[in-house]
Length: 387
Image (cartoon, rainbow, N blue to C red):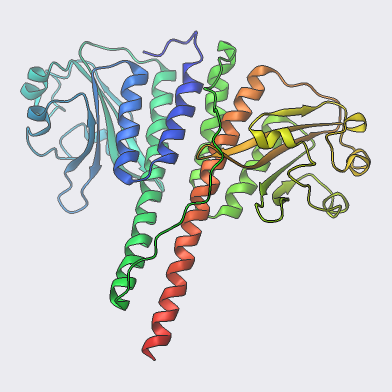
């Protein structure tokens, strides 16, 4: 059980979100969710089952810590095996071997399982599966433990739906190229800048649960859409609300022009934005090396490219956070305050986690859009060739 006097909720949720969002395949997404949840709660095993719409059985798609004999015990029917989960309820069976909702009690006894926590996996307000956690002895879960696992299951559900969308688009594109009789072009990856990305530092235990809940809220928001413009606007709006700052802006680096191109902003005037795009080597350049940078006095700091315009905008201090995706700084997230402001280590740690989750989500959305655009282009091209 996660102890309430640690920062485990926040750290573990961040690391699991990283792993799920960075997964290169649907199976990797599912395996990561199960393994990390089991490890986080320090229990015997876990399994993820998705509902088969035709048979209404719970199809095993990922497991960790369960034997082959147990996994092959027979089909699990969604209407017979702890059916309340289908209504979106979290169900804890403390004595699994004697509970009538357990379909295979003898197999569970032979596997050494004493209790089962069943959490619905929900996507688009629909239960699509169940995450089951097995312990070798009766195990009491706190309300916070259940909230934590439910958040992971929710994130997994959205990631599953997104992965299916990606997979569907890729398959359509591959099928189209096969129809055209040509090989599918390979994607050439851009060069990467290797960074030493540090683990999430400890935070004040009293703030850990709050940071976990906020990161969950933001992660759910960015996972709810594959529209990159919507993703980045969600991020800057959330930052202003969470950190109570004057404004926020998200910029991505342009490797050709060496400018930090504005992608989304809130709270900045049109006059300030019209001053010109900041440059990677002139505007708080240390951020592009992967370091958070705090400008406490904008009127007297040489690292600003547009100090006069910044002061005129009523900005007294700036926190510049690197946005990292795939070990590479892809942009910056900047927080603007009307007064000189300091940030605690806990706040920097939280914002670093948020910025990294944001970077992965932005890249995922852009990859999806590129695949979708490629599909539209080649569909139109094939149609033209056939006319």
